[in-house]
Structures are given as C-alpha cells and as structure tokens.
Length: 370
Figure (cartoon, rainbow, N blue to C red):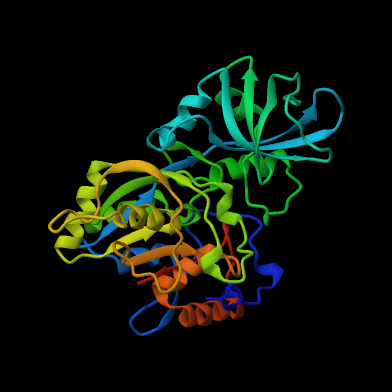
C-alpha cells in the first residue's frame, strides 16, 4: 500500500496543546466495525461497551523526565538530550533496565542529541544549576543517536526529578513554564503507571480515572497489564512511498504470566480482548505472532523487544477492540487502527472527527473501535 493512502487534512487548531481541564472528561467517538456506525460519546461511557466476559489490557509503563537541556562543558553552546533507553542490556532485561539504571550514579544510555554544533566522541555536556550531571558522548549510533555515559553526584533518578523535563511530543508547542511542566508531570502519565522506562506516554490510557476503574470493577470486568516502554520512534514519520518499506524501532516489552493466562482464558470462553492503546496491541500481537504448535496457548509470558509493524491487511490474533487517540496523518498508528477497522471507515471517521471539532493527538480525545 502507498503511504499517501493514509493522509487526511487536519487543521492545526485541532491539535491539543494541553490536556482537558479534568482527566476523564474527553470525548470518545465509537466506531462499530461490523456496521461502520459512528457514535459521539464521552470517555466515561466506555464502561457501557465492555462486559464481564471481556478482558481489559493496559500498558503500565511509566514516563520519566527524560529530556535534558544544558550546555557543552567547553563552550556556552546549548545542547538538548533525550534519553531513549538504557544501554548494554539484552532484550530479556530491557524492561527492567531503565529503572535499575536510573538508581545509579553512573550509567550508560542511548540518547538523541540536539545541538547547534556538530557532536563528536568525547564531548561532555553539563546539566543542572551547578552542573550536577555530566553526559559524555561515547559512540555514534546513527540517526542522531549516541551512546553516552551519565555521571552525577547522586542517583540519576533524583537528578532527573529535579531538573529533567517531561518529554511531551514535538507537536505540543509550549513556552515550557514551570506550571506547564508541573501539569505535564501529572497528566502525561496514566494513573496506573508502574514500570519506569518510557519517553512517550501510552496516551489512550491517559483518559482513565479511578472512578472509571471503580465502575469497571463494579461491573466485574477483569483488568490486566503488559509493559512496553514507548520510544521516540512512535512519532517518527513514514517516509517510504510504500508502507511495507518502513522499519519500526525496537521497543522493550514484558508479558506477565497472569496476563497471558487471562488473555488465553478470555479467548477460550469467547470473550473480547479490549486493548488500551497501540502499545498494548503491539505487545500482545508480537507475542502471539511467534510460531506455536497445535494446542499451545495463544499468548505466552515473557520479555523481549519488538519491532512489529501492523498495517492493512494484517489479521489480528489477540486484539478484538481498541481504545485509541486520534493519530497523525500517514502515521504507523493510523495504519494500525486502519488494519483493525478498515482504511476507508477510519478515514471517514477522521473526517467526521475534524468536522465535529474533536481534539487530536496525545492530549486530545479518543476513539473506541468495537
């Protein structure tokens, strides 16, 4: 398929620059796959569409203040560092590596470097009011990525908490005030975030509130979690003319035994698996895409790293229903939702969302595909 087949016109004014005034008050468009019918609802109405026979799967990754703004040690030139992943670990350790690394006073990370001057091995950047953190570039990895050594006077997590910034998406354009940073620390994070390691939030999960979860519990809906640490590749545009030529970045994931058991049990009883966001979908579909023998479970527990790219005419093995935000034109996320609901229906839904003034992207409204 051609990348241009997933383009749609979007007025810039509909790109949400701030979250809604109160979590859980966003609009929710509902798309019925079997009929193409569209409904305009609110996020709290999600409870009406899921039954006790179904299963809700969320991604419990936690965003950390991975964006650093400082200067080069040998000049007053500005430099920006986006921490992407803890380095020197294998796929089986990748999910826990970030949290372990952040506890240390010296550690190595893969980072994206932004600077007005060329970067070279051995360069040192300093961050913090008194230069409490130093970052030395070690190995150039390509694509603006470097492997760098982080050295601080105390654990890295403590330093980042003090002067690191929340890595909101590039289309959220702000002045970066203290008030905005404080708001992002809370709102660019799900209420169930647990495992540190993401530089982008699993944004569909941002809509859930304790009240919505209480209503789901009262209804008898089971909820389980996977972990997938979201990287900056989620915002990387598809530049290839043919979507099949696009290559996804690897992202670390983990599927606990209790989650695998719950998914297999749901499928066995004929229930539907509701995935919250593209990250939950990618995790479960990556695990299910592994070869398995006759009679073996659909989903097996484990950890690893996946670069699965889902686009039409992909046949889903696990995901039946999906809660997702509205995505960028020609993005891999729009291609994934089109694989689930159909490209034509998805573009019709997006056209209606534009007409109805829905708010788009990470801090915007959402869509439930059932």
